[in-house]
Structure formats: C-alpha cells, structure tokens
Length: 163
Image 1 (tube, rainbow, N blue to C red):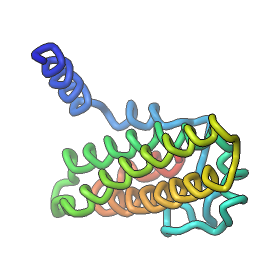
Image 2: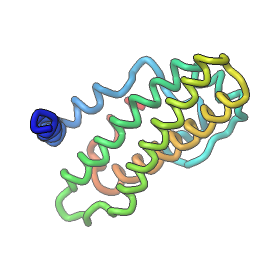
Image 3: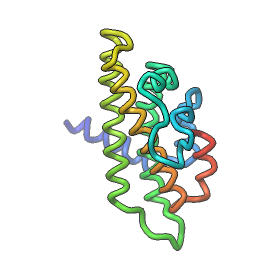
Image 4: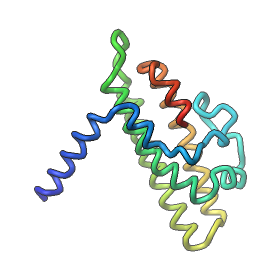
C-alpha cells in the first residue's frame, strides 16, 4: 500500500511539472478527429451518422487514439488551471469537473467498444459506443478549446494544430 501511494505521489508530482510542449507531444499525431464535425474544436456535436463515424475514426485505431487523448486533454485542462494568464479569472471548477467526467466516460465507452469489437467485429453495438465516444470527444475538445481561449490564449494555436 505504501509503495502504491509513493508511486502515485511521484506520478502526480511529475504530471504537475509537465510543460505545455510535453503535453502536446503526447497527443496522438497519427490520428485526428477533424473529420468528426465540420467545426471540430469550435462547436460541439457531430455531423455524421453512426456508420460514418466508424469509418471516419478508422475503427479501433481511432477509438484507441481517443482513449489516449482523453487523458492528455484532461491533463491539459489541469495545466490551464495551474497556469491561468495574469489578470484573467480562475478556471470554472464546474468546467473542469465536466472535462474530467467526459474523459472518464470516453475511456469507458472506448473500452466497451473495443471489447465488443474483439468479440464480434463492427456490429451495431460497437458502432453505437464508438458514436457516443466520438460525440463526447468532440464536445470535450470544443470545451477545451473554449477553456484555452479564455484562460491560456497563447497556447491555443499549438493546441489547434495538434488536434
């Protein structure tokens, strides 16, 4: 128990000292969710059907990228909270909680979809979970863009380019 606590404490300390560039570097650069919506990052919501989303995310590859990026987006929100621009107001705690909730839901939906995919390939259930994960991912990315625009505008161009 003590070893687990020490490891957890060490990872928290490391996470809190990360630079913006190291966070951007952890985003999956080999996959982009830009095809999910015509105004990805600027407006919540998808502009495609469940079948289209499965094709646009490139199946399990895109699901896994969303899984990994959800955690990085959460760490970016924490970074924005820790590094609020001078003269701007603090980050809304409800927004941070919504981002945390979205990240956990995305990760859960992706794991469910991948497990279903492993058992039965791309059935309707897999596509539904993939669509729900993509919808949450799109919403989370749009909220993250708004958060950065309001509280850390200097890093916004790098974020938009990386997404």
